[in-house]
Image (tube, rainbow, N blue to C red; front, side, top):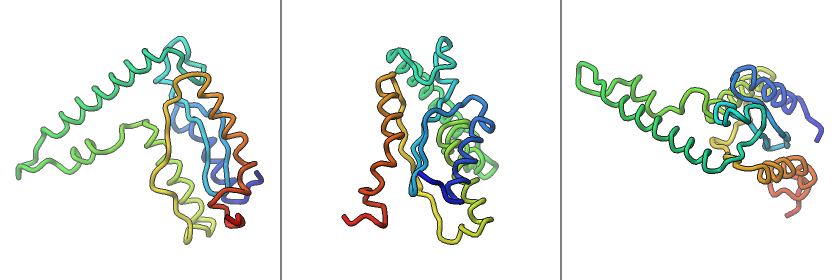
Amino acid sequence: MKLNEMGKIVLDYWLEIPESFMDTYLDAFQIMPNHIHGIVVMKRLLPETTQQQPVCRDENEIKKRDENELNKRDETRSRLYIPKNISGNISKNKKMAAISPPKGSLSVIIGGWKSKCKKEFKHKGHGGWFDWQPRFYDEIIRNDERLQQIRSYSCHNPKNWDADEYNPRCNK
């Protein structure tokens, strides 16, 4: 896939993710004309024995850790709703903190990346017509087999571009 000016911006900011979020590193990725495939590894979610490896190996440990993270998040969010301002309403900052994604989460990482790209697109004169999809697809990669499948899919995706329904040159 040959990158145009916008694709190069996407690439530059993608490669900066680990600089902005120190507990992450990038695995396989592929920039396509209308989307990107990428694996962002969250080191803090890996067991200590696999800190430098791109996938967790023990599914039970992952499930326990996921449940613990969800419980911590739920506890934090429920506590955030308790403080009230003088009028008896929940303070706006506390409410926003309770409904916002946690600091360093994948949502924050991808949202920040999209924002940086869009600002640069606008600065370069491409911002008037461009907009990101509001959401993204994510998956927790739980084993090496799935990691290899995703890497392979990402790597081979450009071969499918000619038949992609969103390719303006496709005759579907």
